[in-house]
Length: 171
Image (cartoon, helix red, strand yellow):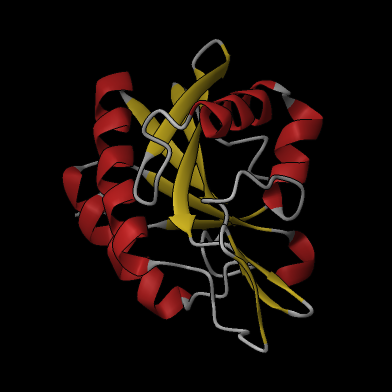
């Protein structure tokens, strides 16, 4: 078993050689516009376009699902739906509306775990290393102490190299 490698840097410029799979957490509302997705969209339009089309189609768009989009030769982005709704100043916003005063974390650990297992399968198929920010621990409100072991069990223990990127200001 290898450990997760932690680097200060930008996940949209993944380090190393060979095929790379950049993964991040998405919500189940079809909303795209805050967090790491802004950096992804600045670099490549394809992940956002694919995510929005996937949401509109409804075809398999659900918590625990993943969508892999090729953005360059040997570089893919994996949209992982591991977040139920989004936080707003008024409360948790879901498909059924804003739940006023409910400021609970939108991360769904079971869905994230499903995503991570699918991510590992994609990485193995593509013979790619996995690159990600601290998924689920930012806007999704999750605990990295709870998420890191999920990544180790689902991805690292399958023999896939994983690098986690922290923005330099976070270190």
